[in-house]
Image (cartoon, rainbow, N blue to C red; front, side):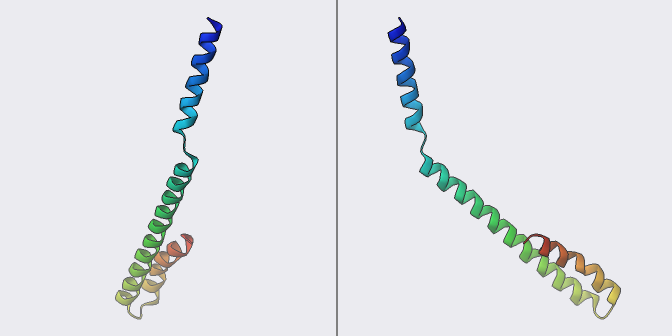
Length: 79
């Protein structure tokens, strides 16, 4: 009985260790990190574009330009 239980546990551990592939896990983690970096870069570009539009619409009004700085600060915070 003990031998049968030991063999079953050993076979189970063998199957579980065979299912795990560290290279696939690392590749997936790297892909997720790359996707996150891409999203951050896209968000920064979007914020900079909003800043440019805001400044253009503000014209020479310094108060409005200062209000537009929130877009620029948010883009800088994403670095």
